Image (tube, rainbow, N blue to C red; front, side, top):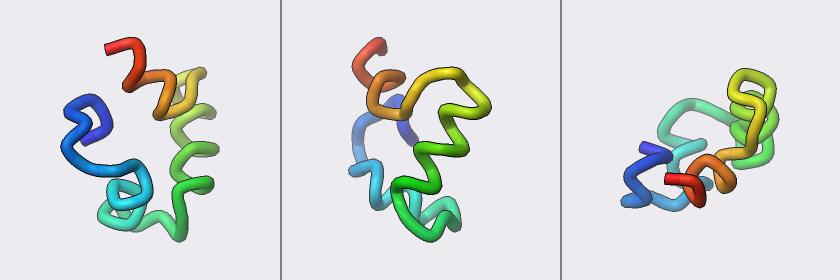
Length: 43
């Protein structure tokens, strides 16, 4: 979902069960080493 850019990050966070976008960002950065926005920008 993050790579396709079809949904806003806050909507993706909610759909994935995170409490908010910041929780998604922290988890994604911990696992991937970059933020979701940086991941999108690099695609």
